[in-house]
Image 1: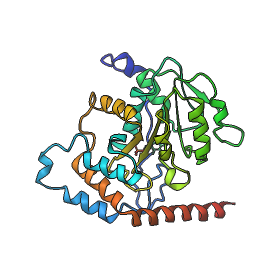
Image 2: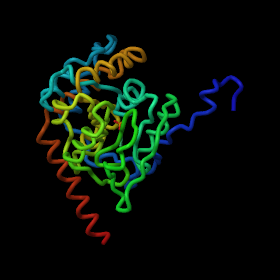
Image 3: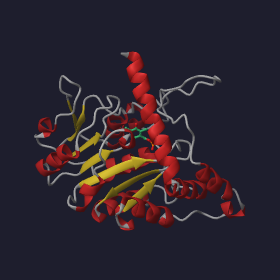
Image 4: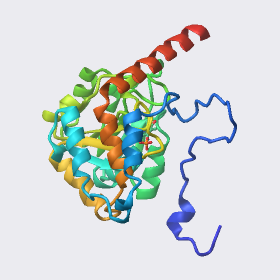
Length: 281
Ligand SMILES: *Cc1c(COP(=O)(O)O)cnc(C)c1O
């Protein structure tokens, strides 16, 4: 404890990232990194950015990447926000959208970064228990809420809500921002992105770290109504104008362009899960 620390720093309870042991040949599952590696086209694009242009700042608006994500997800570029990993996108969402007088609701068993952000940003929150089958029950969220955040599928349970259940949640809370953290959506859930067109309170957060095997690149993004995206941009531009460097922007775009590689590696991970599950029972 240092006398030079702020009161806030004394009171923090930081998130502890999964251990990265320096052992060769270790089958490492604790941080959900992909064993398959990124698209070769992404690697080539990243290498292409190791050039004299690194003396120049990257595009602060990441316009090309946001346009590529908009095309990929069939939304407008103004509905897309990008950040340095989805952890940074989530951090901005906590500040921009999830801090209200009424408590932020999230499941009692979920991504353990959420309570860490609440403490850092001074956000009132309530943990809603999972049901006896370890499921999120949307009816349990029918209580006063300033905002709601939950992963779909939930982590670490891996249990998903259907898109219809997300619609119910959105309809129950028309005046509260609802953030769906889809870090693992490509491995087993319906994305809520199509609901963005009809629900102005919905923000969907995705990452390139897991299903696109780019955890080391730090690319995350959010899709939502332009009003929500503007809130995130206001926070970002009050914090760091250039969250994604040139190699990250180029690599992320190239990954999106390699749909065949993405679909093949996603299918291999799902297949491996089925094999592991049947081997365990
Ligand atoms: C891994 C993970 C994230 C963060 O991923 P980034 O690497 O920061 O993009 C966010 N939410 C959940 C539930 C995760 O498991």
